[in-house]
Image (cartoon, rainbow, N blue to C red):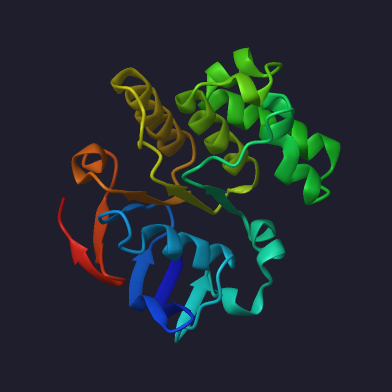
Length: 220
């Protein structure tokens, strides 16, 4: 369970998040919907420790995330797929997917098991495994970013605008991958940001709307 209560982020004198409170239960898929600049990405970056935040409660399954350095949060089972993918172009698709598990120093057998898990959910990545990331389309890059997040995300996935810029066919494949993931790992919690709530309606069980850094529950 991810629980944020009263989370706030400021850049200088500018307040970006204002008393954000939201809950993602174990196994639940939750949407965070808002316009560009509303604070969606900042919320996910705060969860990952990539921006400084204040909060009354900031927990994952009872662990105080404020006490965990940013570089250690993936070791808690949090996977993060940023909006801009952040792939290493000269690396192969498989190397990009493996990277977070290798950084964590996981045993080779565990890495192989996790890679099989990724390929079972995203079988097209097996076909792309040897291709350089620099040669991928934007949609393929989104799939690789999801696969990379899955290498470490066994408790919580954070997906930032995963459907942005995807052609309809690729958006459908991405949605199908999330459905396979839900069926294969019902205990996995997922927080998805999106500007267009229509895209997420069939995929989530709960939703929040963020506007000017403030969050409230919503119905899609």
